[in-house]
Length: 89
Image (cartoon, rainbow, N blue to C red; front, side, top):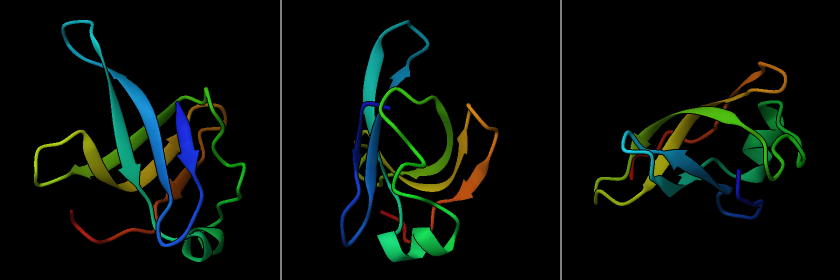
């Protein structure tokens, strides 16, 4: 986890992803809005810089390194959280 932007209308987080060739690419993941995530069990500090997470997501249609997150699993606790976003990009 390299950055978390907790703001309306959606929350975004960014993380470095290791590619097959060993290089690293920074990806952006869109989540639902703050109210939606709070209802789904999130807290403002559910994800912190440096956290390791597993994300199930749909890649942006434009092929950029952005995606619409569906679920996020926190490595520290194993907790799986619904990302609150159902819109495709």
